[in-house]
Length: 460
Ligand SMILES: Cc1cc2nc3c(=O)[nH]c(=O)nc-3n(C[C@H](O)[C@H](O)[C@H](O)COP(=O)(O)OP(=O)(O)OC[C@H]3O[C@@H](n4cnc5c(N)ncnc54)[C@H](O)[C@@H]3O)c2cc1C
Image (cartoon, rainbow, N blue to C red; front, side):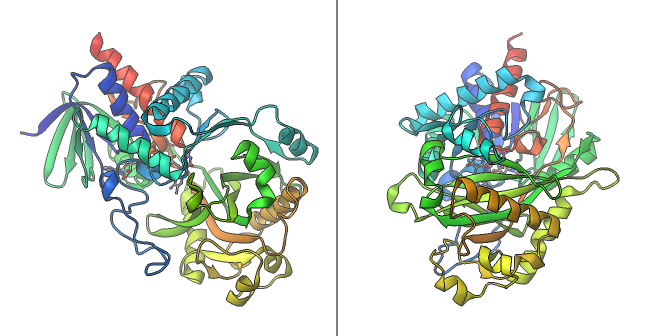
């Protein structure tokens, strides 16, 4: 006989964690089982130390993407309270409710070790005016910067609170989800578990698996967007007037040449550039620490160009993967190039990187990004760098480092309703694997939303 729970939760990232948290709070009698393909938090260790292991060795499961805390566990912990980016949850549950839920999760984070961290706001700043004067658009948000270290403490505290009230199954990748008469049955290795409700929160790393679940269960999906670009690294001082006041600024620019939207993304003052491994493809990302001891002299951020495709092309992520694979093929991983070399048409060499007035925080392969990135995307990035130079002089310096490729994959969008419920009753798809969230705040909020709906049904 399969073990039975009231609620099965697949994935222990922010979506899964906050579903469990809220369910426990609203109805402690519910039996909740969480299945996570990765390790518990304390066992998540990426072997890259920059000395013995310099680049990704393809661990399974990957400690950066999988395990308690999900993809965000070692992230910079930038918790953005906004409907302007980070997902489209508001289209399903309404703008007011989405913000209320994000604020609610922020309060939980504050009461679990995050107290004392700073909340920045972009509204009505001089920087917004400066951007507008230069054809740039600063998006509105409140940004809580937890930092990688405090983010870890918050997750640890939440886990300690939940561990005796929820059955956690680690190193337990769910292979199959099936509809039964009384709910759902899932397969983990040789074992089966049953539940009345099933919440799937498999995140970005579970995107391929999610596709098979949707195919097997005939849940309609669509996929038409991918963002492609580079990670920019420059001396901290160049952006300090923005990062001191806002920490993270999301700035959008429409290119003059093609009318494409280019945006800054994931800004890390005094941070480090890191590798990211998605389904075996190495791309680039960045993070930073609150602890001054761990900070660097550089700031990094992504510049991403949004690519929307129309019919008949359906595989936007495949397009992004092919470009990232090309950089992996040429550079054995991530490629780094000086902005000056890119503009003058030279491949960067190790000696030119060593002679630069900036020390890279990631040991990437010096190379030529113009051999990897489509012209249209590269042109957009170069245009944006010159625009940013107007509000942050020094951005277009020859020594500014560009790491490629950074790809923001969007999960296919699944068909769900205002309760984030699929066409199957009591089967919910939330967080990044639903395609409607792309951030810690939206994913967490989607978890709380579903938990409240399920708890409400149980109390009827
Ligand atoms: C390096 C990095 C930095 C980031 N920085 C930020 C940031 O500063 N701010 C921000 O808002 N966002 C950030 N993000 C994005 C953010 O982490 C995600 O949007 C968020 O974690 C999504 O939450 P989720 O619960 O939907 O999915 P995830 O966090 O991806 O969690 C899903 C979990 O499900 C598990 N899983 C997958 N498939 C299965 C399966 N079949 N069976 C069992 N378990 C499974 C995975 O192991 C994973 O632990 C960052 C992401 C990365 C990779």
